[in-house]
Length: 392
Image 1 (cartoon, helix red, strand yellow):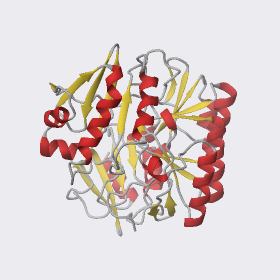
Image 2 (cartoon, one colour; image 1 turned 90 degrees about the vertical axis):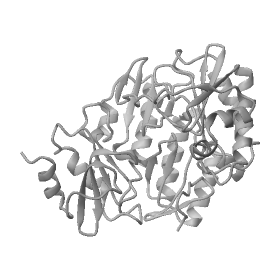
Image 3 (cartoon, rainbow, N blue to C red; image 1 turned 120 degrees about the vertical axis):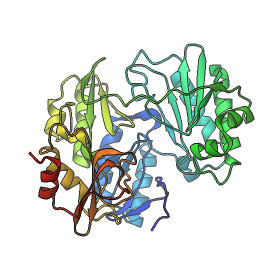
Image 4 (spheres, one colour; image 1 turned 60 degrees about the horizontal axis):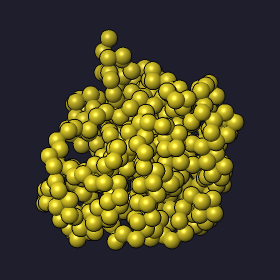
């Protein structure tokens, strides 16, 4: 099995309960309808057809063997969805605004910065697999809610630079931004044993790290805002489609690709909110018929679930089946339910009003805590958990 903290890439699969899983990283959060159809077809041909949407705006198809993983990777390179060099592909961890090129509210220069930074990152020193960069430009769906190791915010005539877990920021001109990010990456590479920027910040402090990269630190203690709502027809003629419990099937992805080509601009946009955006599509009925979430009132949005069985070898329960069953039966007053296959709580590391943790004997209940906290109950059946959650 892979070591704890392992992060898969297209060439470095992760072992899971349903075979190997791979990660596809579309450039600038954009995939064409043609590319989406290829990905869906090859995911069903070589894998099991299940595709996770990750919180880094990537696609994670599942169910491969060593041989079929190799064939799938080759198909992704041929489709223009991956780099042929495994080292470059491993480091392509750049989160971009999902509506780049469509939303006029995104700051000018954002796309140029992303292109230049993508080229520069191919020459950065080797970094931990999870080390990522975020470039935001505001607009309809800003990425302000998302954390990253290095965050760049494009504004009129300047770029704000922030570090993951930091309480300081720095300013530079757009022309200086790529070099500044490169200096930060090089400095971080020497701060072992830190694997993420927030660990380096905890040890050395954000001001010191910024200063070491030639930047002038400023105080920045603003909290991250909540993630935006993206289900349904949004402003600027964009359809937001949320994947139930973070996963779509190959058939659903192909259906969305056909819809994007027929009624939209021919692209699908990736987001860190486990949702896909279809610019130009202004009707949700077809996506809803595919079984996807297209309204904010959908009760499945109140449940967070991990992969669970059979996809995760650590899980003690089929969490997605449990989440599906519970979602339509939850009491209205419960804002969020976390269903975890084990005590690691991968899908929702933070606290939740109610958390169910799978065990060999059923689900234990935790109120107002994390999956690793002490349970408030002995193992329960789903029916029993529902009775506890809604005693009326």
